[in-house]
Length: 239
Image (cartoon, rainbow, N blue to C red):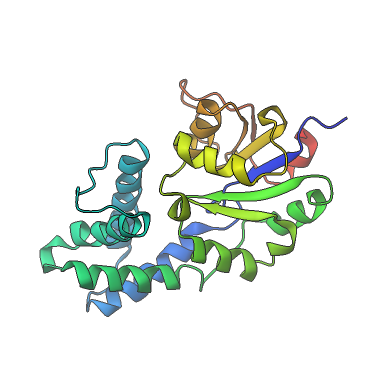
């Protein structure tokens, strides 16, 4: 008898190669600003963007009191990162909002799946409830899943954008539980590449985790995934 009924997959760098998507979107974005592309600038952006969202995920992001609605909160968070990163050119808020819209629309254009992602989901979807839990934009996630032809294997997508909170926050998982058919946490497994969002999210919310670690990164002592895989197809043998 199988232990799990619900498999919760992260999207970026678990099923989709996010670096390729980011690089293309970043190239188009800075061209709009009249800035020349360089790998150094791209790597600086990735480092900044990761740190920015980790600040939000840890609950340390300060949101202005004037922002009341979820939609305004998401708009502020996404636009503000461009204002901070490109502060040398004096980007105003309206321009930052437009820049974010361009950037997000480009994220799903140059889309490459992680090897065997579609095969894994195809092999599993008849026996499990499969869903996506992502901290990325909802429309971008939908486009990526459709372009990778993964949509027929997935029940639904939960995005931090629609929840107003991200992995590993409790509120994100409470929203997710409301949508699952299976309500037993003991029969859920969260699969993802991030220790700080996926593994920690599972640990903090009573869900088993599978850490996808294709680059053999050393495991920090504070994180305790239920299992670890280096290639996606290894998951079939672990279930």
